[in-house]
Length: 404
Image (cartoon, rainbow, N blue to C red; front, side, top):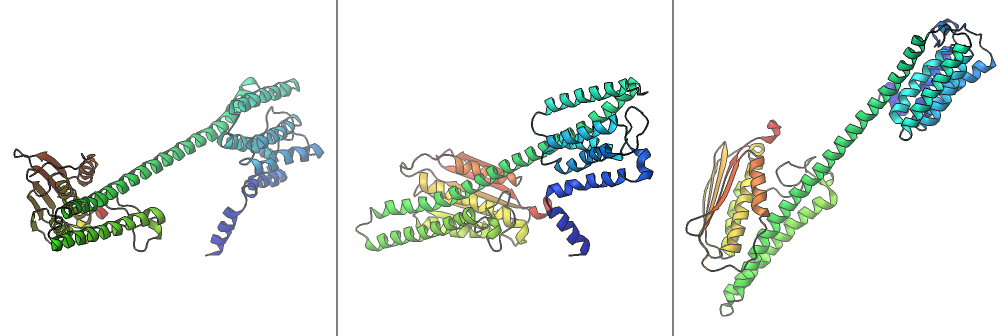
């Protein structure tokens, strides 16, 4: 760090009272320089008086309380005002009179309570000062006193405007933080839904099938092994999600600095369109007859990551619904990938028997629609004339890193 950098670091690390004292010290020194006496504040145009003991009191009252203008703005304003009144009544015309405008601006910015009462009290005090100066024979006309008052109002107004701008900025940041937290909760809820629903549904189907295979020990063992494997996959994915919730993205090695807008939360294992075969294999082991047609092409990782994850989630949700609501029905999965788009279609035949699964919440399909539309794609679901179900998605392949 350079010498200038060290000085700046120490300066901004010092107490606010010390930093706020600097303008007061500058005004105090300037008031003691003889050549600058003609540049002092001259309200009332009375003849200037030589400096004496009361001038020192006025100088201290006008300058040193500026150190308190952010921590105790009302006290600072009261002391500076007292010094300013003494300065003008005694006709010292100190350069330190400029502290009045600075104190008014700081009060307009930092004063939290009794703002209207303070403004009314200042107006009354100024009226009394102007009247006293007029009685003392001031040649200043009403226009001069009104002009000076308007300048003081302008200083207060500038501080009040800065205050409102800060409040508006703080409110904007607060609302942005609330929105970001809500979006992150939605993403995590979506991932939890996709992971838990898919794995648990497969486990339930296998467990139900095992009840009717008592006479076939080999098939029972196979069903129970599938349940155990699926449970381990669910635990692994849930641990990854819980790690994100517990540690946050900044503590995970290799995780991005911020959550992806439409993808998995940071730290969660990212799936891709190539992993669809694992979903199909798992569904088959759960007893669902699934046929997969897949055409893919090589794409840069950055370009296909979001689209590939979304395509994976579409197939995952469609197979989960097939296992829940049409167990044993033929399901056709088609994934066609080009350099510009991934097309997914999952068709499930009519249920062979009435499913005893509880009605779905609709969160999974709604989440899929949000995922696809966030990538400017299209998503459609609907029942077939034969009682089956179709899920279709067209997902553009976009490099989000360059499109943001």
